Image 1 (spheres, rainbow, N blue to C red):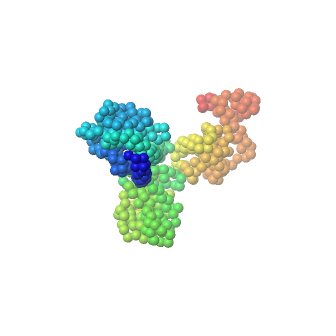
Image 2 (image 1 turned 30 degrees about the horizontal axis):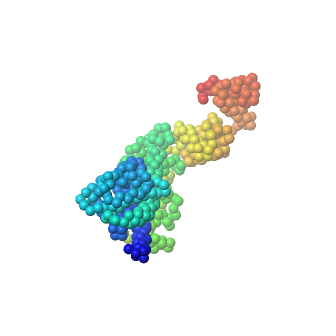
Image 3 (image 1 turned 90 degrees about the vertical axis):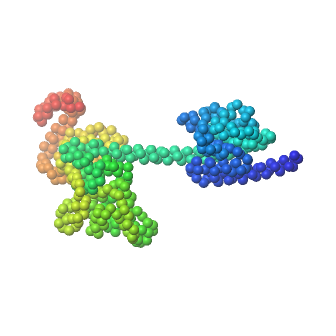
Length: 521
C-alpha cells in the first residue's frame, strides 16, 4: 500500500475515533447510575472497531475480587462466571501491573483462562486486548475486547491507545459515581444515627425524674405509645409537654415516620388554616404554587398540635372533621385528601372552663381528650429538682467549655425554696446563667437570678436585719469551708483566713456540726 493510501487510512481512523470518543462522552454524561451508562458505551465500540466481545471489570478493594460490571457479546450466565483474583489470568495481571496486554491469538496463550466460557466453540483466531482502568495511580479495574485476528500489529497498538483513552473516561465516570454513592451512604448513615439518637434522647426511661408524679407520667407514656390513640397533654407552660410528645412518637410504631410540630399560638389566624391543611396555587394572594400543609407532611407519622387551646372557632370546626373523617381539603381546593396521622395535642389552658364560656368546642374537646396525660409542675416534684439542676449544669458546662462541678449548699437552698412559676424551662435558664457567671467551678447563691432571692417573688417571708444577714452569710461561708475541707476545722480556718480559736467560737455560736462534713465529699 502506498504512503498516500496509508496516510488516508490513518486520518479516516482518527476521525472515526474522535467521533466515537465524543459519542462515549455523551453517554457517560447521561445518567449518574453507573450500570445504566457503561453498558450502552460498549455498543458504539463494537460498531467502530469490530469488537466481538467486550467487558468492563471492576476491582472490589475489600474482597480483592475482580468481577464483570458490564459486558457486550456475553450472556447473563457467562457474565456471572467472569470473576478473577488479582494476578489471575490476563485480566488479573493487567489489574496487578497496571499495564495493558495484547494477546494476538488467545488459543496460543496459556494465561488466557476464558473464565466465562464464551470462546470454547469458536474455531477462528481471535485477538484479545486488555487495558487497565486507572484513577491516578490506582488501578480500579480493566477494559478488555475480543477482536477478529488482525495481521497488523500496528492496528492492535492503535486499538490499545483508543481503549486506554476510553478506559480513562470510564475511570473518571466510576470515581464520580462512587463518590456520589459514598456521599449518599454517609447521608443515610447520618440519618439513621440521628434517628437512633432521637430515640435515645426521648426514651421515657431517659427522661429526668425519679419522683412518684413523674413515674406515673412514664407509665402512661408506656401504655399509650404503641397504640393509635389521640393524646392530650395537659400542664403548665415549661413543664415539658413537647418532650412527652417526642417520647410517645419515638416509642410508637410510627417512630420511623415524620414527627411534625405545630405551635398553634405562634401562627396568625390568617395563615393557620393554610399551614395545617395546605393550599392550592392561586387560592389567595401570594399563593404562587401548590403547598402541602403540616397534616400532609405528617402522613404516616405524628402531628403535635401545641397550644391547641389558642385556635379559632373556624379552625376548630375543620380540625374536628380531620379527627372524625381522617381527611382534609387544601385551601382553595376541591379534592379530598385522605391522611393517616396520629394526633397529639397539648395545652396549658383550662379547656373545661373555656367550654363553659363557649370559646372551645365541646365535641372537639372529647375527640382530643381520648388519653389525657397531666404533667405535674416543678413545685410538685421537688425531689427531681437537683437531678434536673445537675443535668443542666453539666449540659451548659460542656456547651460553654467551662468546668462547673457542683452547686453550693446555699444555692441549693434557694433552688429548693423557690416556687418555680416557669417550671423546668425557668430552672434551665437559671442554671445556664449561673454557669456563665461562675468563676470557681461552683454555682453559688449569688449567681442565681434576683427573682430567686426575692421574698416577694419566691413566696417566702424573709424579714431579717442587717446583723442577721451578716450572720447568715458568715454561717454559709463557714459551712462551705468545712464542706470543702471534709470537716477539718484547722484547714477551714486557714481557707477563711481566721484563727482556729475564732473558727471554734463561730462553729459553737451557729451550732454547726463539723463532723457531718467528714464524709460529705
